[in-house]
Image (cartoon, rainbow, N blue to C red; front, side, top):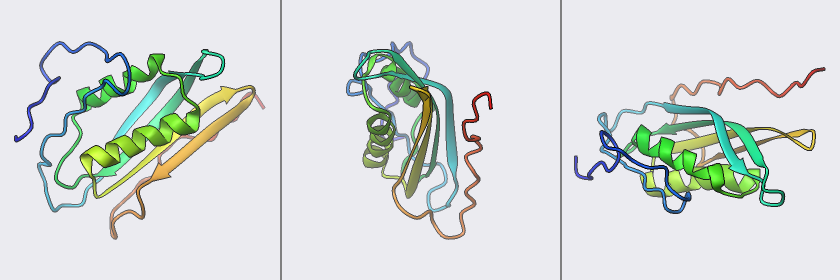
Length: 150
């Protein structure tokens, strides 16, 4: 590996903010092979920027690695750093996707943010870097639309 792993196998405290979080990107073990990696975070939390109340989401991050992959513990710490971060659903979801895309430079990335209701309205936010590579199997993200009690 060319980049040191700063979290794996070590005690790593939760970063104070998403900006302070450091993500680790080891080399792709299968360069040149188009394959899909999926991370699912069903208990993601951040804060409403107006009320300061917690917001909850089910995040699904799909990406096709190029030269590097994202190390899962560093991603977990990055996502956990949003617990005390205030941001609208759109800013948080797209911000996570853009940071991963800019730093990791994957062949393709998409993120689905399935936010639980705020004010009685669920908000789903989706972002991707472009069209997925030709011939790649991209399964549905598997998160059903919010149905409530009706």
